[in-house]
Amino acid sequence: MNINLLKSFIAIAETQSLSRAAERLFVTQPALSQQIKQLENHFSVQLIERTNRGILLTEAGRILYDYASRIVSIYEDLEKNMEDFRASISGTLIVGASSIVGGYAVPCSIFIFKEKYPETNIKLKVGNRKYILEELRDGAIDVAIIEGEKPIGNFVSSEIASDEMVVIAPNREPWNGKDTLSPEEFLSQPIIMREDGSGTRQMIEKCLMQAGIDKSRLNIVMELSSADSIKAAVEAGHGISIMPRLAVRKELYNKTLVALKIEGVPLVQKIHLAYKREKVKSQAAKAFIKFMHTPNRGFC
Image 1 (cartoon, rainbow, N blue to C red):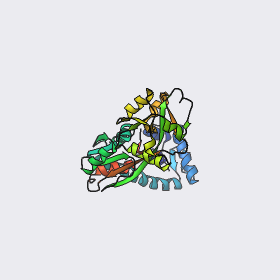
Image 2: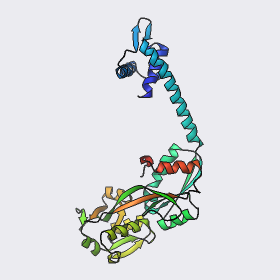
Image 3: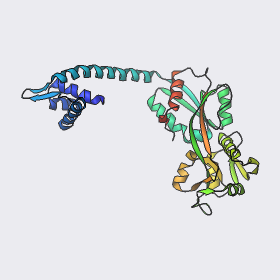
């Protein structure tokens, strides 16, 4: 039941007037009447009587008033305690994220988390998977969010999301209007890849291997460490590439790039959260880890 219905009923019971209750609650009288009707329909009893002396409670109304007063009091106490708890979560948290998820997803998560826990101070480090895991291992960051396989080592880790990877090509002939290409077509094209140590590259090579495509057959003409530089090179017509969809949403929307699938080759990017158990002791770190496991993490 909506707690506001009970608050409205309490206001009517205490003022014994629809007009005065409406003024107290800053609502219209018709809206207030509708709320009381909802309560009466819910309990299937009459709760108030309109008389020349104002509004009087029926016997059922008096019972509801007693319970409603206690319920609203408990609810308001809960709200205050939760607000105090949110305010108590403070401190600095250093988050490391691999290039794609760190550049295109995690910033929005941090923004939403900061709205929820404004006393926290979060610093974000972005680099390739190898660098971020080294930083986590050395204790330079508290929590890592990385693409690729589940990290190996003295970490607590879990998969928190996944993203489709797509072949990207410039939006012009022969690519515009296409949505798939055969493995043979893919292997015949100049390919621009992320550098070794990249989680995205790791997942691409694994997906291709599972589909029976040897990575040595790839016609790699360029290796770049920046997603933006890869997209710029593809837009300029220097080759095609494979990237997570979340990293190219703007270009696909603006139609500077097209996204294609390789027939028979599912391409999926896994995203993991990892931390060292002994490193995560603060309430801020625990709250952030819990938040990142929820659908409300708000990847950009």
